[in-house]
Amino acid sequence: MRVVAVLLFVLMSSTPASAATGTYLRVGHLSPENARVDITITASANPGSPVRIPNVEYGYLQDYHRIDPGAYAVTIRPAGADPGSAPTSSATLQAVDGKAYTVVDLDKSGKVLEDDLSLPPAGLARVRVIDGAPKAAEADLVRDGTALVRGATYGSATAYSTVAANTKSMQVVPRGTDPANVDGVIEPGGVYSVIVIERDGKVLTEFRKDAKGADVPPTGSQETGFGGMAPGGPGLDWPMVWVLLACVVTAVVLLRKPRST
Picture (cartoon, rainbow, N blue to C red):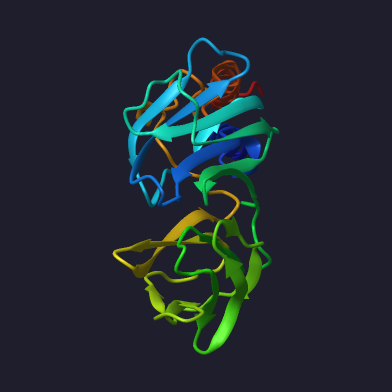
């Protein structure tokens, strides 16, 4: 039965689960000049079938979706605008296999951020700040009096900082205005983005877990906007499944067959 156990282990391990095995994209709206926008994503390989995400609210950042490697154009227009009108911002992306990207409008400009979702060193995590709040023209991410990320500036994203995991609360501390609490916990092996926006003159934050461990892929249903552009998530290699099942059955039969004396 040892042979059967080994074959079953191989079968169960045949489904890839690492984020590094795919290419991922998420888009968002972090420029307050327009309260709501329409986002259009066009793949160069399929220009006749763009993906449109209408009526996106300021502060929105979607989950990751798996895409094919290749060239993409992301255009952003005020909500309800003619799809043929000039965009308020745009960006082009050359997506590489195994990479993850965030495309957002920041300070009226389309920005392509390359996201590092690989596993951090043991016991540590990575965190960055994406600053979409004009009132937080410059800010630090602080935990227990120590800056985890320094010098975040409006309209940009910081580099990732490698930090120790800790359950203590964090704050975004802008220059010249009140700090904003960050509702989240940094866990070992996690990769995080702290999103900074403002509403009614008050700086607010959102804590996003981009990845947790190399074996946890980003999430995001294909049905929420990327269906015509992207393949499904990692799945079973069915031809290999049938081959392995046949091997298992054969091994069971041979092991049960009476031996001649």
